[in-house]
Length: 207
Image (cartoon, one colour):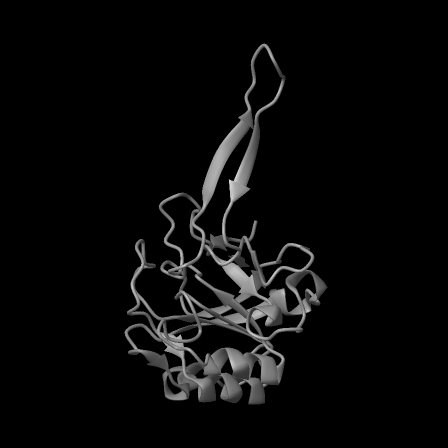
């Protein structure tokens, strides 16, 4: 059997949301007992908590919602590139060593350990890096931080580059235990009408 790497963080009340987002919560509406044969629960959360796929609607009014997107970018050959401690922005020079013959999907590891509490001090993509990856045929980018743009950005230039070049994106991945190299990515978003993002159970499978 091929080895799997689960690159999704556990979702719980302790999972740090982006400031202003709704944290994960789970409550019971029914429990197994004399009144009923099953447990039933309700989940409440922002779709941006934990590992997730942004839809273009997240950063552009009138753009496609998550349920409208083609699933092809979220499934297939990908390359994990290590750029640990690269600083506030991932530049093309941090990725160039792994750039020849890039597959359509690129995931970037920027930290030694995935964060367990909110901090604005994470690495994001430089906008020119998104454009550079697109020029090499990349159709999906992923990162182990909370956003492809810095926490204090109001203009979201890297998100705008994603839209301009038609790239899809995964955020909040956990790449701590994943060696650099090539894998099969499986990270399908839910088919939700009108949603600006979706949680994913992102995994990597050895080739």
